[in-house]
Length: 132
Image (tube, rainbow, N blue to C red):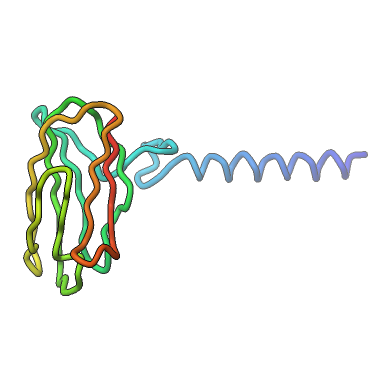
């Protein structure tokens, strides 16, 4: 009986420690939740969304706050593929991004439930920003 209790205690300890490790990310003080977008920050009343363009777009899906001014910051670093030719139909945006650098795209406040999609010139790569 003592052996079963000991094994059960060790098993539960492992589960609790493993669960604790999964809850904490990075510096150990930040708890992440499912669906949270780590590429979104808010500064001076403007929402900043970081997107990387190289071999596709990363992250492919972002959740953002609705009804506030937003800026997409699309970063490139040695990007020579079709993800450098960015189209965002919902904004009427169509530009070739620089090979390396940061392109700032202003997005007017969006209503809850709106999704803005970006795609490359060939339609191979895409990303979505969902406003909630």
